[in-house]
Length: 184
Image (cartoon, rainbow, N blue to C red; front, side):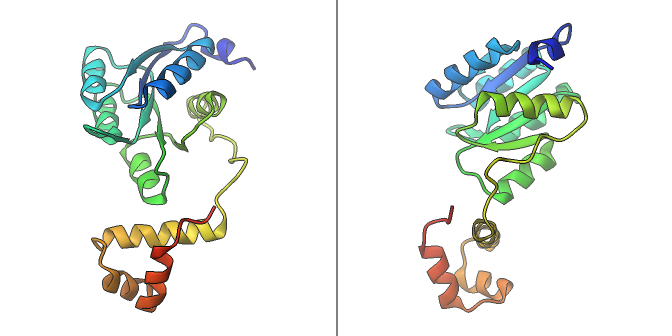
């Protein structure tokens, strides 16, 4: 079914929050071409003002911005409009932030650069009560392990000894893992 047909007659307002102006305008144009009425903002304060003025039915929010986190906007939007469908975008994709976004009320979490079709599919799948299709390129087992180690490391306030103890891992092994780049 065509995206425009699915949205016909429904509230198509969409808040697009991203501090990358080029990405924001490109994604905004693509979403408008698919039937959404976008409100584009570049900061958390602008997004909170837009939500206070008129809470949109949809939102695509960046996770990390210069003036705060997109999670603050999720909270404000959930208070103003509990039925809003929210997608989080981030260039810093990890399991801990994905869990935080979903717990806050986002319906999906996508890593940048996200394709406009992926964003629309996630928004409409949430609207239909289903879940979006599985990703074309899911994380490898090595990447999932690395993400888990990073999450525990963050929870232990970047204390290598405490992280190694909690992971039941030798401290030097953990240091070697932390010194390497993330696997693909």
